[in-house]
Image (tube, rainbow, N blue to C red; front, side, top):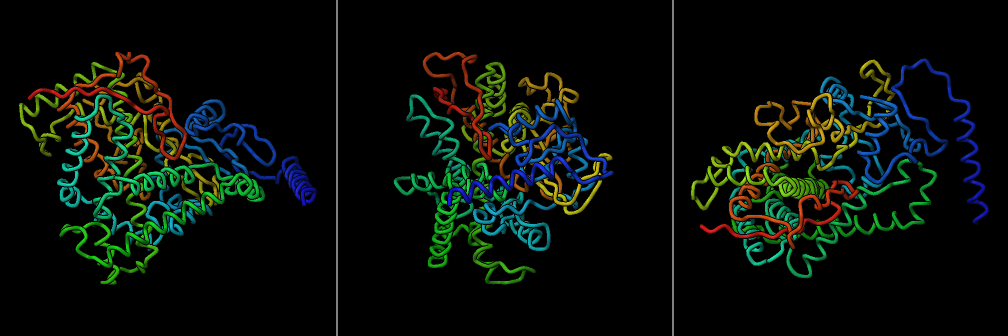
Length: 493
């Protein structure tokens, strides 16, 4: 058996070398590319932090557009605002589809999620359901009480702790807010809460992990050998069983939410009414629940973590943000939406954090549905597209002191992150841009304003800001590699 495998590997490498040495003739004007190796293409040039690797390659070989080969997959790397505008606005419909990845199908309910579904009528209908019944301004305002209750719980936890693990607190807070809005209850306490968090950690780990089969299909045996396939199957099964249990529990007890209709209630009602143009079956309901949860937790917690880290690293900015909150509130204990709207510097802090630390720095990949020209280059059907939002937001041609944390740059700047300004696209843009921006920012702004209002902050054991670890943890979302521990001192009334 082993010799047979060796023969297959040898033949595959030999055939790849033949193709590499005798490429088909073409007159196409392809984007610039770095040199590549047989079989693996440019995989050897990709490190654990994809956005950094792609940025380095683009600077050396590509520029705004670069074509690389990730195994068998031709991949267009977009590293400028003008190129991103071509992809996500001018030719948005050509690039409106997502790659059809086998592992994604298994983990994301056969691609019935809004974020991963093929572009078409099903995607339009379920996106409309999500926006109208979960992410609209009216729904966000309806969820204010949930946010306020969870903020109060977070503040109480901080009050009882001498040293606070803010990284963990932000994860728990966003988990509980999104779970209550989506499922009508939380899953963070006790042994069941521990298992739930572990399941989610593993879900994000395998979803963002290296999937060799996707890039080099004939090396699928490597994924099996290293246990990746088995882990994907186990995590997908556990998530499916959890979502099935949540749906079954709600069907048995429609009053579970205590009179407040949550997203699951809405989906069950829509399924019964059967008034939309596509079938909203059990799998689709689970997909929409999974989408709402996964898109709204890890990314939001990541933004909160990096925002507080940058404020601690820049004490003047921290003081300015605290002074603004306390001046706007003028002794009030509770923060209203009107107060939030007046926190101009805090909003600038969040914009600057999103510029430097987009939670998914290379966004979710797209794929060309047919041959097309982009900035004069020929892009063939099936080419994957990675938009490096991290590199675009640090372009020195656009941003002064591009790698420096300077919230003041946004006080007199009209650039926003909602998908209209391609210099800043942490949430993407166009048809496949994130529909949950308003929900995420309402969560971020309210929690940060409360924490700045009620506590003074410093590093433990007299730590110096220059020693604050800013390294990144590889993954689907780019968290801090080292958790953020702080000392919080309550502010006397």
